[in-house]
Length: 321
Ligand code: GYE
View 1 (cartoon, rainbow, N blue to C red):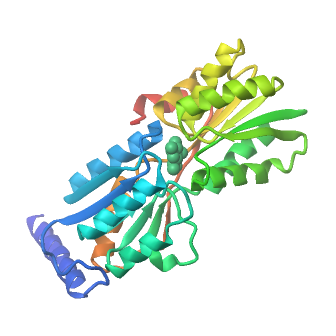
View 2 (view 1 turned 180 degrees about the vertical axis):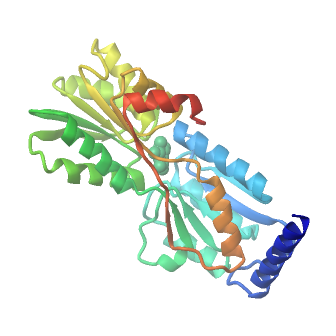
View 3 (view 1 turned 60 degrees about the horizontal axis):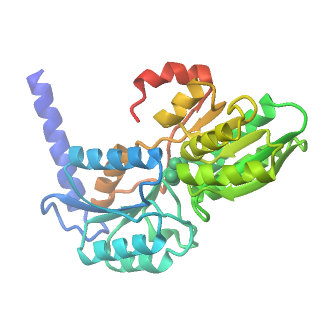
């Protein structure tokens, strides 16, 4: 047994040495100590984000990666500033979750010129130049929207009036969750999106928008919220208007964080499409490879499922976030 372990270790050592000697394209030369990652987070807008931040911080610790972390408070200009400061500090790798899709080319070019590899995590950028980043780790948001639309097509009859609570304007998950949903419901011309507004992925945003929408569209049958938090905000507004969430007005959301799953189990939300925030371990693994100059896939898609109320009841006791 001992011998086996010893052999395993030497094979590992050899692999590491070979990787270091192969001379990657990054700024890191050899193994001069701990790897440093600059991470520019979106903000703290939702339960999903909180779980994502925790996952990244914990995984960095476990992987022995020094993490420089910044919270952009949902503002692109803050993220750009953070990325510039990471370039100045000569971190080994930059990872970030872009608040919005467009407007990144200039700062990403600066990172490229400084030979600091960039990893996109959670959200994508919209750029013609895919050499500006090494890889993109995260969910397929179009597929999430499709799953939400598919449930609606399968589980409703007759004319259905939908109001949509969109995520942050210009953000990949807002654009793609809308797109996938619309594509699926196109099969049912009697399902109509009566209104579609941004609640900025926050609970208070969802509540505010829903209050207004209940006044302008009192005939609403279904709320499609791009995340749990906005759906939870909508629940408050619906209750305040004297209606029953989950019954008078059906609710579909995306994420499956604990609070959302609890509302689903309680019958106040009808269906949740999962979006997994626990990206930390995969991100650290990719970061190490990228810094070592190893090849990584350009796209790593997160695996996800969906939840009905019964499935939520079963999953809740073990839900980590
Ligand atoms: O669904 C939402 C968060 O980008 C996937 O951002 C993420 C989204 C998530 O605010 O809750």
